[in-house]
Length: 399
Image 1: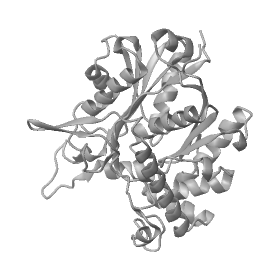
Image 2: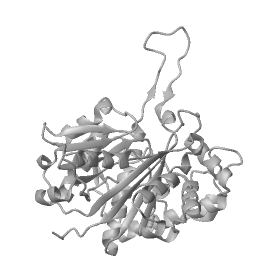
Image 3: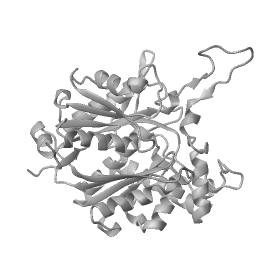
Image 4: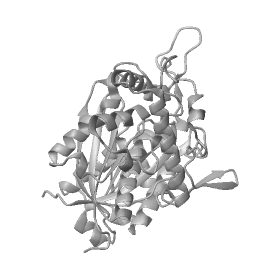
């Protein structure tokens, strides 16, 4: 059995929290389960209608995190027999969850799957790597696992340092990066005000003792951002560098999911397919120029499907760093007027297990609101890869 008619039904995500913000005390499993249950409800499906759960996260944060895919599956309330798969592809982990779920559907292993992921970077632990077999006298060093996540394993460069190298090599200056960042914030503010982002979000209940609070909005969106404010920020990675906290994505928390299945099976289950998953592509690039990744990934994807940039109606290019978006724009001619119209990682946040799901959801949501078309979601991946995914809108009410 091999299926090609793979479709997506829109789900839900949590608000994306700031580092140390409103989600910092929510265990990974609990946050994920809330978003997964909201996704099933949004799709109009019962949990017992899913036969596969594909889950992405990049850093263990709690005791059950090494088995988070199964822990979240059980905590959500899926039937015991529902299979669970954990995936990791650095910053593209959320996209990979969608792709891996599609693989299951294509070969007949699954009819209806849920795909997505989560990160609670605010809960990432410190570790002592010298203690297991004993150590000699003296103080021992606590190592920050978050530092591990943001350093390239082959070059030992921070991801921001690779963005500096990309900017230097291709001539992207600080003013252009700050301009992109201001645009991202302005677009996110507008999308928040219009209710576009709220359509994606399932508010999260955060318990604090006997009380609880509801977190309902993305926390990193900065209203009133100006070029002057961004220009006042010091470079984050090099004394004479261009990358700052204002034109790079923040450390973030969040969870989000989407439904993947054969189109006929989704309809039979009661869901409304919103988009067809046309294809995807992954590539490797030089780790020290990690931000180049989306360019060859997009080229490979478009060539595979006989398309040109002009044939794509909407683009979601992950704003890991503004330099990456400037690079895609310059190298491929991707139009700014059709890219990241609702903000991006700079303004909304970038938890790697979630970002690809958020981007795909945003792209499909945009296509449905404009009446159809094609969209590409693409991103660079830490340690030197690129990934791109192509979707085509469907009429959710069509037979």
